[in-house]
Amino acid sequence: MNPQRMELVCPAGGLPALRTAVDHGADAVYLSLRGETNARNFPGLNFDRKALAKGIAYAHGKGTKVYMALNTYPQPDIWKAATEAVDAAAAEGVDAVILADLGLMRHAADNHPDLTLHLSVQGSATTAEALNFYHDRYGVRRAVLPRVLSLSQVAQVIERTKVDIEVFGFGSLCVMVEGRCMLSSYATGDSPNTKGACSPAHSVRWIETERGREARLNGVLIDTFREGESAGYPVICKGRYHVGDGQDTVYAIEEPTSLSTLDILPDLMKAGVKAIKLEGRQRSPAYVGKATQVMRQALDAVHANPDNYKPKPEWAEQLAGMSEGRTQTLGALHRAWQ
Amino acid sequence: MKLSLGPIPYYWPRERVMDFYKAIETAPVDIVYLGETVCSKRRELRAADWLELADRLSESGKTVVMSTLALMEAESERLALERLVNNGRYMIEANDATGLGLSMGKPFVAGPHINTYNAGTLKELADVGAVRWVMPVELSRDILAAMHAARPEGLETEVWGFGRLPLAFSARCFTARARNLPKDSCELACIDYPGGLSMSTQDGKGFLTINGIELQSADPCNLIEAVPELLDMGVEVLRISPEPEGTEQVIQAFRDCVEGTRSSAQAMEQIRDLYPRFSNGYWKGEAGMNWQESLSA
Image (cartoon, rainbow over all chains, first blue to last red; front, top):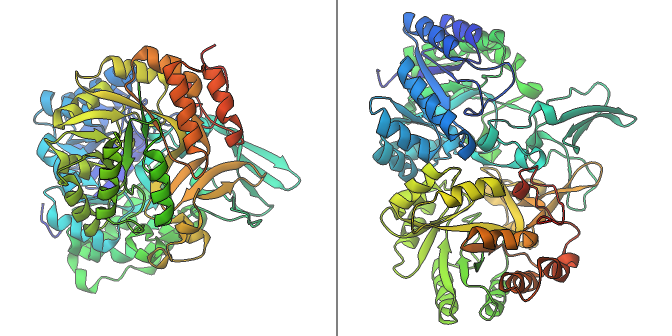
């Protein structure tokens, strides 16, 4: 790939989303097999083996790559399913598997030496040394950085690592270091690491009260929404709480907001970022299509003329319309956010 | 089963740290983990101070391990870690893959922030030099039993036995946020909260603890009732994480229980009043925040 081109990597929670991502200009799609082997283990989402083969055929037919995420940390009870998923990925001919677990990486490196390995964001690698560890030991070629580094830190890491770097470009924002967050299992028993689930739907209850609409997670009051307030899905990091002795109710961790790098795409390219990832395997095909289309246009503009790139107002508007909390941030890439 | 004392998770003034470890010299723990694991801006003690403390504890018969940051971001942090790995006297506890990469070939402890969820990963860690692994706090006794039984020869198992649980790390500093300060000029606000800053739900229930860039549980995890099971399993080390108050009583209660001079129930009575509530849900394979007594019954 031309080093001056960033690959657009789009989410596919199912075949319809895969098709629409491919049709709207994705360079690559990422997907998962059903079950606890991936970090978006939601009911009704992801691929069975037959759909996987169809998806790969469709994507490859149009020159789009397919990456398979197997990015939970399989415990002994699902170890076999996880290694079988790696074997299936290799057999079906995916272009890369996205892993986080050291044991699974060893399995892939030993049994499928030709299978390209990417390090998942869940692998929590934030330094060149960490990335080079995965490269030297398992042959990892690309890594997705956790959403914790500033732009200048991303550039420093790229200078010293042998691994290609992919960053999140748009979508929901994890405020925690991915792969290092157990808030969900603390409240519900299920976490991204253990079950591929954050704030699982079976633990969510909405309760109408005199004070407003309560969102509870396994009984824990995450937020209370007054009439007219838009009520977001209750994840712990986006709830409102009391801090210390204070009586105010505040977003102690993070406001509901989305990450958008639309404004700094040329900076990411100059820093040496090789791929831009869109979050959202749990999103509808319509969302995926629209987000892919906007980012495709933006990336094409950046590639054509990075020095005079100006995001079009309608791109920002379209992305804003799809954002959580209807606001957007550069997240940790912008130091002041931290 | 040995007892270990984890690194102090909070930011305490230098004198307080010195006094704390002075008392630990004679406390019945076998292993002491030292150093800053949460934020590199916490510099009441410098690297040389920690090593000096290590020497003193070592002379009092403790095995000292130098702990490392859970989240590495800046170049300066990487350089500090490199120096620590090469200190020549003490083993380190690696808490991220940077530590794994730098420790390669040297004996080290794979700390609680290394994601170790299966026997395949245990083998990888042993292959790069780990001599002990600390179980991630969200795993259950059933998972522990399976992994401990399948561990490579020579790799010890350590379990988080007591203390607030380290649940999440972020680029953002939540203490600075609570004080309306930007992270880069945080005024080292953490020093005002020797046990972190409590975060409770809108219906007034303690939920989490803000500790700089880390979120901990509000209630300490307490596995004192599981000590007989841990002994049966042959777990080698049980960890107690320091809290601002009562750490010495907790150590004594666990020591009595491990040695059999008190039953779990009796030992529990020694520490029950130190905290309003405990948790042991993770151990039982449930939500981590749950608390149920009579585990072994």
